Length: 237
Picture 1 (tube, rainbow, N blue to C red):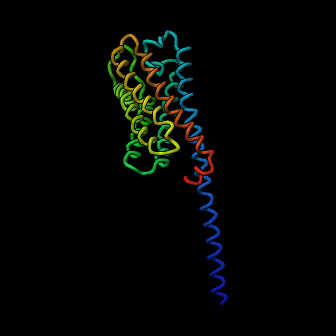
Picture 2 (spheres, helix red, strand yellow):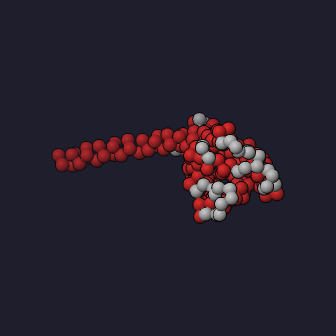
Picture 3 (tube, rainbow, N blue to C red):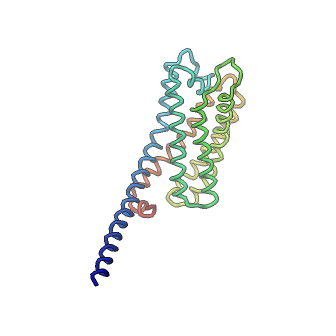
């Protein structure tokens, strides 16, 4: 009897310990979730600040005709490239939260993959700076160039895929039309970028990125707003 009683007490202690561990896991996951959302709100602002500081301190520099990537070679190069990398990491982190938000449907997986590509592209932009003007294309310049074009091309597609997801989920339906608009604007701006590459390259590039940053910011703020809803938290955790 003593052996049986002792075994029961041991089992109860184990169950209690395991229960406490499982109770802590959602709270830890929730803290990570909140950190990712706050980072998602800050990262686009950081990228805009890095560009602004680079333009102001990078003289002689023409923000209308010169690429943002040129700032990665100047005095504020470390700031600009770091901002690219931070934004890329944040995009990938937010992609995982959106994937959890919308479930494991085919559309959700495609949207998740597109955001991973966008995030990876920004990381590549930061890790592999562009070539200096007048120099031959190096490997890092080649990677940078095509990563930049991929960003411009994949962003509108990402908007359209997420618009379809937003339409089918009540709490996200308000962002459906905006996401369609952002995708169409992205397509138009890429065409403008290609046509006016010589004279308006810097301006058109900045408009493309600003359109993407605003979309990203809106998504992060909306997720942050949902995270304050007790019902949403219960459904997620």
